[in-house]
Amino acid sequence: MMSHTSTMAVMDAESSDGSQRNQPLLDVQNLTKKFGGLVAVNDLSFQVDEGEILGFIGPNGAGKSTTFNCLTGKHKPTEGTVTFRGEEVTSKPPHEMVNKGMARTFQHFAPLYDRSVLENVALAYTSGKVFSWSGLFSLSTITGTTYDAAAEICARVGLQDDLHRMPGELPHAGLIRLELGRALATDPKLMLVDEVFAGLASGEVEEISNLLLELHAEGMTLIVIDHNMSGLFELIDRAIVINFGEMIAKGTPEEIKNDPEVQKAYLGGEEL
Image 1 (spheres, one colour):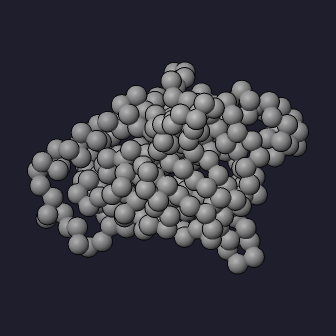
Image 2: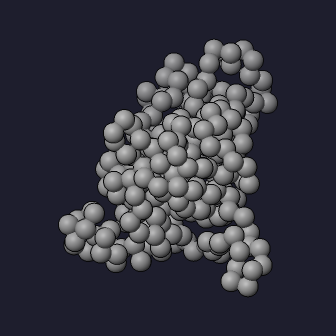
């Protein structure tokens, strides 16, 4: 697998001498999400710089996908703020977040199963909505130029031989590629990738990881959730770890591996 070390460092708003530092691409402050009496995300703050690959790690039920849902507008945060590209976007609806340059993939696939792979990507490209397509976007409105662009995106994610297959005909790895293609069609600046390695064989993990690294090399900033720690640690610059909705650790992959709180959360204190 390709190794990766980013030249981007995580920077505060000001340096120690008081001079201004680069503004983060994404700035999350005191994010909290409650469902009745359940606190799914609790006072979570972190930043992502342009050009990073951030790992977002935690056991099942830790609040990772809920955080993604709050960032992308699917859930309205109970408290806290989300700033993206210098603009506060807290609680903006999903289609607005897509139009502002934030896209995500989903752990539970939701393509249009009555449309081909090419048509799925073409609709995402045309509508600018990867979350909630409607009947307003019919295939009859899609031009040949759009289909050409969609075919290029399909080839970019490794689906060039599957353009006219239906999503239900794709293997699991193919559906992951389709999720990436649909998100990529919206031309995001930041892509949130949810459980991209789940259910993949080791060779498929390497292929998808290399694809993400290629997208990153072309300018994409990524936040990646996954439980496949070995695959994720080969990919990311740094990670934050949450448990029961709270951050318990942050740092480089090596620092995360050796953190006692992370080891306790995952394996009862055994080393990762």
